[in-house]
Amino acid sequence: MRTKEPEGTHQEGPPWKIVGKFSTFEAADAKRIELSEDLDLQVKIHYQGTENNRYFALKTRANPAIALEEALNVKRAEKKRRKARLNKKRRKK
Image: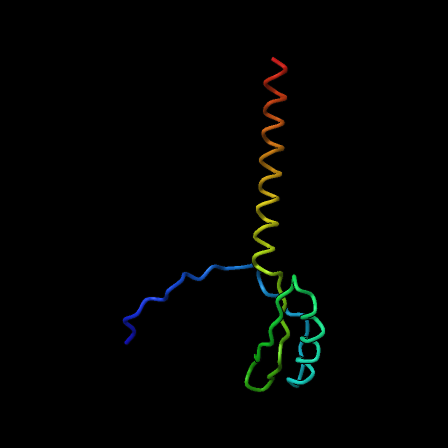
């Protein structure tokens, strides 16, 4: 029985995308090392599949900190555009 609560809350980040499926871990690891040179990208290997069809999936996603900053920039730009449009309507009167 668990009595301790987790220290931090889990925050969802950008979704993971499957880049490739490999039959061996070594092949997936070689591709992971190649892709991990990009610092803006997170890479992981996930063992998955059905009982008869097992494989190593190589998954990537944008770094959550960078994705959050980009989302905030888009939101700020949208807000600026709305304000400018509203001010333009007010000036016409």
